[in-house]
Length: 176
Image (cartoon, rainbow, N blue to C red; front, side, top):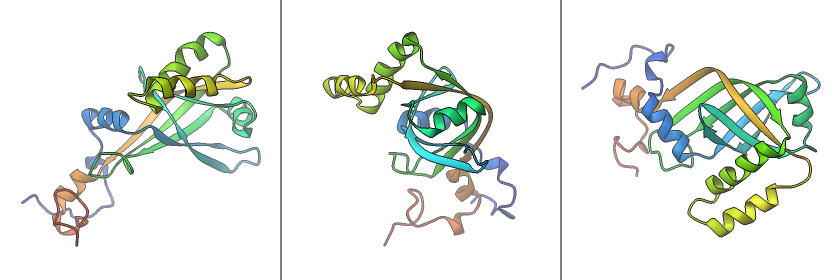
């Protein structure tokens, strides 16, 4: 049996490995996007994303207040959780990012089909209908360039402290 964790104050050793990080990207299409509102308060919404070439890509309507706020202050954060995905052990990632707001046709033309296909996997007709819906006047694309990453893998934490493992964990005792 693994040594029991002495304390959970320092969780750096429970970080998500690169392979697990990629598996989370493959399994999850939602993140929480966090930015500063015009009154300086953090604000967040749950949105869909895709991850391509080390960057996160999101889309929104120009009418959303967050678009102007992110243009004014491109420092954003995203949080991704395994909750609701096929991943059994709880995992999460948070990234500080610099946002670039795109409105050009070239970016929309490559992003929207990729985005729609990721949201409607294996359903080309539904993906095309979704792409058409997204291709609306005032559509913007957020390109988020990560500057800092924090990852967490609960499987590592529970391996260090089996007695605290929740009963719904796949390697723990069966749920009642």
